[in-house]
Image 1: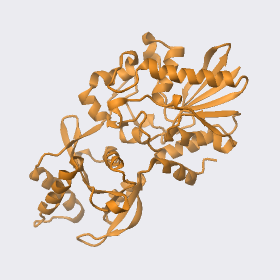
Image 2 (image 1 turned 45 degrees about the horizontal axis):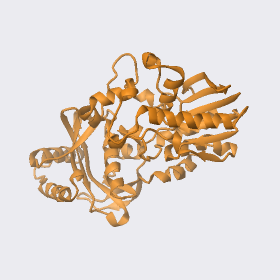
Image 3 (image 1 turned 135 degrees about the vertical axis):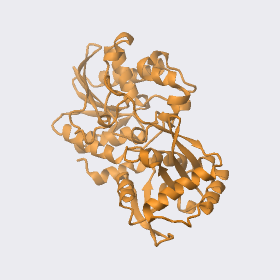
Image 4 (image 1 turned 180 degrees about the vertical axis):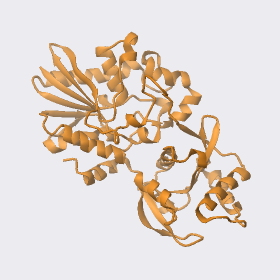
Length: 391
């Protein structure tokens, strides 16, 4: 009999930023690093003989929790990848909920009838995953195997092996680093347990912070989307003034005109440089990027990241960082950069929480600002993971 641990990857950018990532190769988050450390502790007393993984960064990094401490090589197999999501790749969930709500609902509740332009269908992605899983099981009789993969393909595997479309409502969802244990014998799989996340505290569990997967109560999550801002000097000026006066106090002579002209200039070259932040049909904030600033350093500069006061303190701000990451990664930048007042304690705490680190100073109207950078090269997930020391 072969024992097979099937492990979902740690929290990655798509989970945190509320963007849909399939083959999009995203990085593990800081919280994901904590989950990997917890996963390593879970497997300290387990015998594992061989490790397989999807070739995407978020699974390869997660696999280090097991293959690293045990000194095992990691066998990469692209058949364990997540679903190729076609035109959905890297789209905000808030956008998909507006432009394709029927298919978004089917993706979870009726994957057999989910179809998106350029994407794999259910038969394709479930078939390749199950073929690779069976091959791994047959190649390792009487051994213990660990497979590191992704949420949707793991769910498809469980649906095919242990459930049906009629019972899909009973099929749960796997948390980041959730573990399933299967046994394989005489050509058949048996589930010992599925989607166990008992190694995660509520503070680091991804699902604990989300509602979409729950079967009872409020299942809504607040997912943002973005649209290029049409010229609107009054809206832009009101946002700038509120942010300025919240930090520096009343400013009767405050003139947002120069800021606005600069924002329009950047938006002429890159439309996504100036975006309205949307929650359903409500305009709730503003994101202004300056691609021309510090471009020679490989940096993507965030000029203004703003939410209306009524929408602050609700965990939404990080989604704006995700939008900036998406734009600047597409433009080939290696880090996000911004300037923040050293006296703005809430902003400093927010940026540090999500991985920004001081990198110098930049001039400001009332003294120098602290320059802060966030590395957005996905491969560097491994370097950051080494600092956590999962062994």
